[in-house]
Length: 210
Image (cartoon, rainbow, N blue to C red):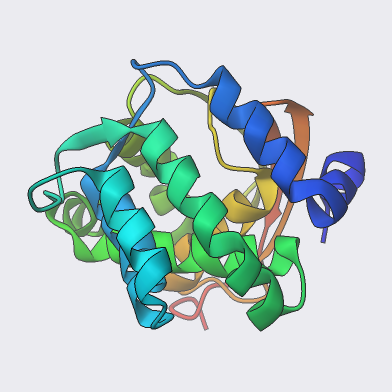
């Protein structure tokens, strides 16, 4: 699946790309605690006490609160600790990021805000995508989104100031479509700038329509 030149760079040079994203992050760039919790759980599951100690130090004192905002820098630093294991487990950086995206969306949809999104959309793929930019803004603060429908089951989504690479959002959007019952979903992402990306999204007939 897509990603083009930027995806190749992430596959071979993810450490350099992550360093650039970290340098670009400002205090105003935040992410909800549920996503930080998810990465910390992945680090804890590795069973590496030294790595876990480094991860906990990055998160600071006190428990992580699901709906609190945390610096996106913390999330990216945790990702840096986790990436070697993701690459090893999934066979590459892109595949590891997609798996992380699937997990992140599943966790978000289990939260209060995610359950509200499911209620509003009625688990219809198109309605879920129409409400998804709101969910992104709730989860990650002042990001910008433009969703353009090209057909009843086909759209183009542009994102700005999203600090995770395109393969992560591919996994996240695929999970969202799966939760909506979409069949044969396809999400192809491309980086258009360091923290900007765009996605071609399409799917077949939904489960409910059959």
